[in-house]
Image 1 (tube, rainbow, N blue to C red):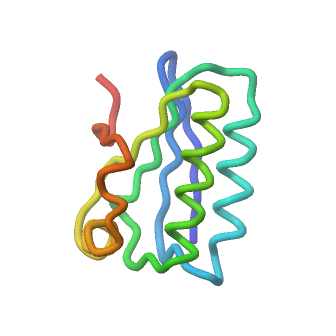
Image 2 (tube, rainbow, N blue to C red):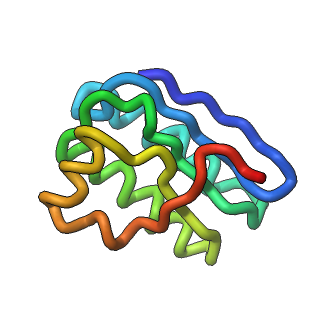
Amino acid sequence: MIAKVSEDEKRVTVSLSGDLNLATSSEVRKVLSEVSKSDSDKEIVVDVSNVRVIDSMGLATLIGGLKASRDKNVKFALAGVKGNVEEVLKISGLDSIFDRADAHAD
């Protein structure tokens, strides 16, 4: 799993690449925690367009990021939802709790 953080004037984007599962979720959780702990009120966007597989621990990691940002009153959204990620979100009934964003800000 590769987690790359980029930032512009409106948002912080965490671009994930690889599998988001039990083996990698702690690494992603750490990155999301660091982003959420910043003093910024910028929107947090997690780009999952390059995530091949997500499991229940991966979902839990995204939910944790969502909760942390909501606690700070900061918008949290997913970008690039497709394939396995989209399927797992729909099957789990969690697709409706995440806002969606474009992968790249305008």
